[in-house]
Length: 218
Image (cartoon, rainbow, N blue to C red):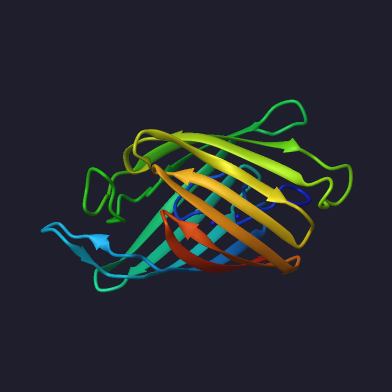
């Protein structure tokens, strides 16, 4: 799923939403998300399920390639797993954003609902540009935060619409994330007690979620 030194995955992520925060080779990130849903629309009308538990693994395979595995346990509905592929095409510099292209659901497995399908199994390409719009001279602080922006576009499961957001690190320990993905807003507050651990809480599509992440190397 993942801004501080080296633009790591600060301020969390939103389920399945690509960002330009790629995990470096030899490193990985594990995330757990509990999403308290109001109910998932059922094909025959009404809703089913009222929560989802999500596990995410992000692996830096090479300098320019990242592989992600996401598993969702949707209460009273089903379990879904998808594999995602990211490739860095353009490296970010002080003068221009980085560019990442990729594929969501590379294997075409059954996945979550989209506006077109009750269980979307389509391979879904995307492109995203990311840039540190405000870069503090030293560690971020309340008077000089780090602000990282993302703007992307994707087809199929990404619903053929722009998506993106902002990640802001107010200090090395505290930050926020503001996103819009698949026409739904998301807001996250983030606490990093130590460099390798991140704790998040907020809402996505109006439904509350909490999550935790661990960043490490092998």
